[in-house]
Image (cartoon, rainbow, N blue to C red; front, side):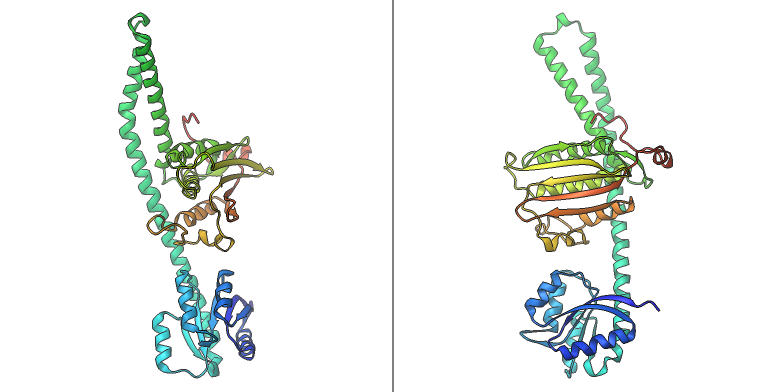
Length: 386
């Protein structure tokens, strides 16, 4: 029989009770790896060093108790099965613990219930995690659908009068004899024509986000997607940092154009928001692409912001976890980015040191062979002039 592996945080000041608890769990069939802590300081350090599959805590501990420990877990937004296993304790305290949200309360002289209780809570924790995953997917679909509808509507409303404007400006420049135009008048027409072409490029960039329903994957020109994203994000970037592009060659990846655009836009805007306004001369956002071997491509978004503490670098990808001020972020952006990239067969991560900025990286499958190109329709930006 396969033994269920459990990474356990044990909050217990008695080594004898530790032995009893581990013996009970292993006899029940768990493959337990654990650490034991006895003080509040040790507990908080261990909590940050997680993740943990479950937490079992004594009630009375040196300087704090099981309810205080559980409160620290809730404050961090962690959904970890939390069981209190104590000696003789009153019914009133047990009721208080259950009302606070503790998953179960057991007595040390009745440990026969420990194995079934932990099994139940691990199963229910997995169900909650799956439910959150489904809600996240629904939120992603709703967000992409809303963005796509908005983008398609805006692009359509702009495109019709814009086409007429470009045609008339082109006619004026080519049909009116030069001697009938002053130098200033001709220059004004040419400036207006160039601006209208720039607006047309913006409309094309917006259209990248107008196909959220397409789930199929195919070869995507990463540089075209990135250039569109950088134009879209420019208003967030220009007063915070210089923008530097270091593009490799042949950046064709397996992915979905609209979804990759959302991932990169999120990462670029996050990079910009990590940098204070008004210091663009001293800060930088660098976008780097390169091949990794024969079958992978890598995109990196570097910023010179304050960096991310080591203990938070994995948690920032958790749903609803955010380091931004209240009202600024929902904590869903990076969680959604991870899911989107994972569904494309890729990976996403971060490298950061406090005071030295951050680098978010996206690792995708390369799509350079004829086999890749035949496997799915090409989805690169049509008509992009990036």
